Image (tube, rainbow, N blue to C red; front, side, top):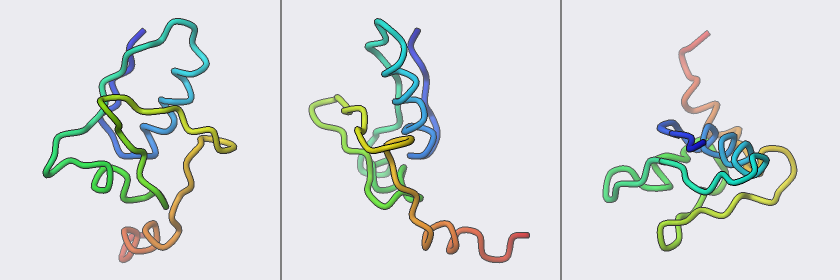
Length: 82
């Protein structure tokens, strides 16, 4: 099992939690291609980006999905939509 997570930071946070629950899940593909596709660009809806260090991401230890949604970013990107 190797998830492919080509989505935003919220989708990555969800997949990281799934990976943590599946025995033997060691690999995942995730978006990281500086300078355009960075954690900050990918995680624009999160209060803090999920950091990549030496090609690895630690599974967040916070409650729930491990990532906190930024309500101001959601409001900004929701303008004009109903």
